[in-house]
Length: 224
Length: 232
Picture 1 (cartoon, rainbow over the protein chains, first blue to last red):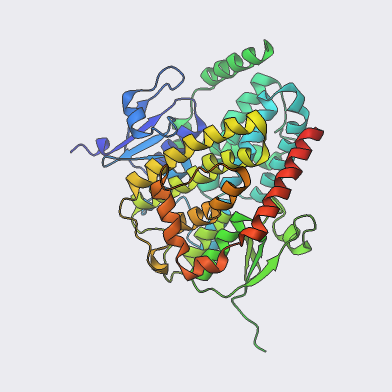
Picture 2 (picture 1 turned 180 degrees about the vertical axis):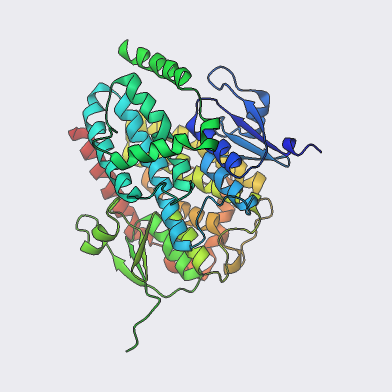
């Protein structure tokens, strides 16, 4: 059986959630077949069969079994391909810290940043303020480390991919400037390290394409 | 007296289902711990200092090191105290299934339960319908992915079981509060029986919150939210 066909990723080109999965597979050197699912247009029968619950990407299929939810998938990849490029530390306490910060980014920060850029006008000011608070905690947690994971990219860096790449583009597209080099020098440096990484940059969607997508999004809001 | 090198403290709140999760896990593993009941309107300095980002319960402190977020705490407990029951299965795919359904409950089900609790009238009715849909998905998922579920002793209890019993264990109290039940033997037999089996275990009974305490608390909590919503 074709080794590559053993792992399939059903993803969406512009989604940071989808990209998390691809990043980890590439960091671990695990080959996979990528299947583009433009969920904004139409969901394929395969996707509906594999992830009827959320009807969302990403979905990982390995040896015929499917898994959904990007961070659940990332932990699965970590559990399954243990020998190359560990994403989580070994020590239980350090693992708990990594999971805590990844959850913080996934549950709280991403939503706040999103709302700060695209939320209803009435909430915008409050969200921007909250965004500053949220990012301050991350700036502090990062400290002088190259990555949240230390010297190598780890679980938190992967979870925070939106902040490293997508958010910068969103800021440019919306004109809402929150994460600046002056206010968040460490996060700025980190984001450059992250997107500059040879493996990560292979996976990132092209800036112009994302910019166009975001501008279309803002276009919609402006007309509301 | 020799200082206890492995000191475990849990900051919790009696009505918090998240706090309950950690209590159950500690009891299952036979871990000795000090419990600090937090008054959420007047939090202890320790809680605020050790969980500055969220300032929430539950917070576990192990040898002075804080661990926050119930999901994170449970995995930390399982990885640190490796005695049985193991909270996560050995097999990676089974682990992913457990994590997925825990995530579904935490994100999709609890969200809609909160809507039911904190809304009234038409908005609440709509939330109840949404809740029925999500519970249906959960029911189907549990039936499909955990077909051989048997709970007879502590060793049979894992992460998903803990989340299920802590989140849904008091479903009859909710039924009493709203006059409408979502979890029952007809609509959600798998989930219903799963909960009933867990309730038979001594460790679960120990952690149960009595109805006569919970129902008035839920009523007060609901009123507080309705009031706040009316004021904005």
